[in-house]
Length: 179
Image 1 (cartoon, helix red, strand yellow):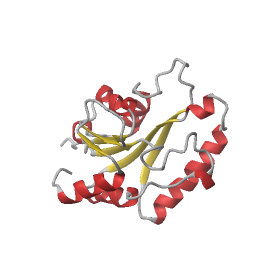
Image 2 (cartoon, rainbow, N blue to C red):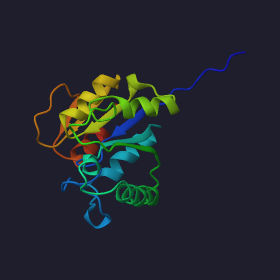
Image 3 (cartoon, rainbow, N blue to C red):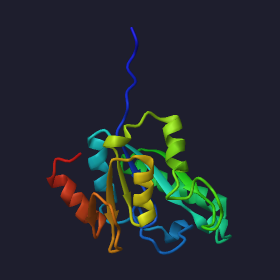
């Protein structure tokens, strides 16, 4: 008898502007400020059995503004802070290239999602991506991620839902039956 492969719903998260306030090239713990409502929003997805992944462009590394080691130290601290809130992030994927570099990982290219798919069985059609830039939403479409959430005041096209803040998104999903 063949075993059926289980595919998981996933939530793909941008970092700067979604998980933390984007102060511009955030690379130090003392500059990292979680957005209001992010823990509560992620817990809503966890309750509905979504796996959480972070996909983030970190061109500050490629531009020489901070090191790979600084990014890794901040990431480790961030993941520990999530654990304290009983939030498990499956993995963090980043592009460390400057925008002018030719690579397959910088959003909206699909390299980070492709890497996640090579390691996990994900039901992209029923998954979500939260971002604050057009490149985030374009990544979702380019990868086949079914639903998108834009955060902030930027004019972002082809998005499933658009909210000014993470708190607004959290309030919406608490009251809806969409997850």
